View 1 (tube, rainbow, N blue to C red):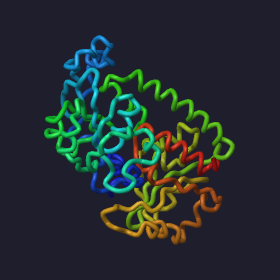
View 2: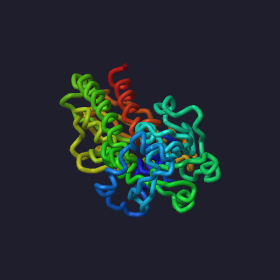
View 3: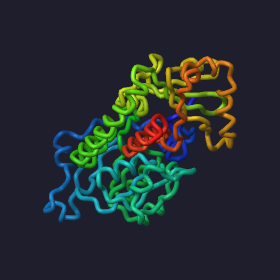
Length: 342
């Protein structure tokens, strides 16, 4: 089964797009070409933010090695376009890059709600993230394109402007962000952003401890045709829950995702649970509520501890189904609201 989170992610996978797990139309892995090694130390150092005197030369560029090869990118880009869904957009914004255009999810919401206030009002929308409008990308006149993953059009995209294809593995949200920052010469900005996030994560962890401390907490998403997927410790969501001091059920430790049928519903169990209900492949035009009801109507549902404990928190699909770095803020807000009511 296609990973429930995979497609949305790497795309927007669901949230950005609307929700949460993987859409079957988007790639479920990082770039189709195996990532090359990270830039050499010398290249990494040269990719550091240019000094005012260096950036004065608009033609100055730095060669970096990314997932699909080498690109000489501007030392001080002035017009940045992001493609491959909202992960690249989130990274560029968090790193202080001047975004003039970005692609969007192919369904609502076009960008996750938590990101709306971060996107420049004058930035152009450049088509859907699975098939961006390359004419619109060209019209945006970028001097740098940041691409989360390759849909097969890297040759055309890289002819428009120097392009960096990020080596996101969608396993560790910190490492993926730092990897992107290194390629873009913005490590200092990334570390500052992460330090701020860690402060907020620690604060919420302290608030959650009296409620969820000492309990196992499951996180999962229901999907098409009576199937579900849990978010294991090696996924973005599982790792963030662990950062918050929460304990995942043993069956969810050591893996990224686990596909579960109605008959295997016990693999979703925990003392408490975050559930993303009703995600379906938008292309199938399924009844979203019906996918949720398949689980609620199962005789096995009432045997689950989080049901018996009345400790199930229905998570926001538009946040839990995507990835990025502002995504962490969206997750913290949703978890606080659902668990603490604030």
